[in-house]
Length: 88
Image 1 (tube, rainbow, N blue to C red):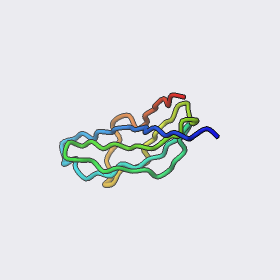
Image 2 (image 1 turned 30 degrees about the vertical axis):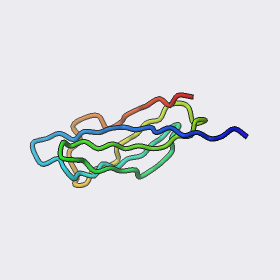
Image 3 (image 1 turned 180 degrees about the vertical axis):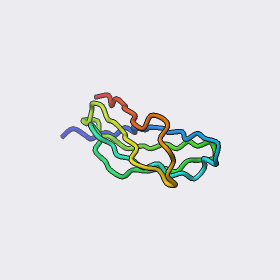
C-alpha cells in the first residue's frame, strides 16, 4: 500500500476599498482536483485572508476556487476566481 501524502493548497484574497476591510468573511467553493464547498476565511486589518485545503498527492491537476459571497456583502469589482495547479 502506498502511503497517502498531503500538501497544502492555498489561495490568498485581498479586499480593498475606502471602508474598513477588516472582518469581512470571504466564502467560496473549490472545484476540480479539490472538491469542497462552503470554505471561508475572515480578512485581517490589511484586508487579506487565506483559504487553504489539503490535497492528497494523487489529486494532481488543477483546482479553482470561486468566491460565492462575502459578509458583509461587498460589490464585486475584481476577479472572483483563482486557479492553482497541484503537482502530481
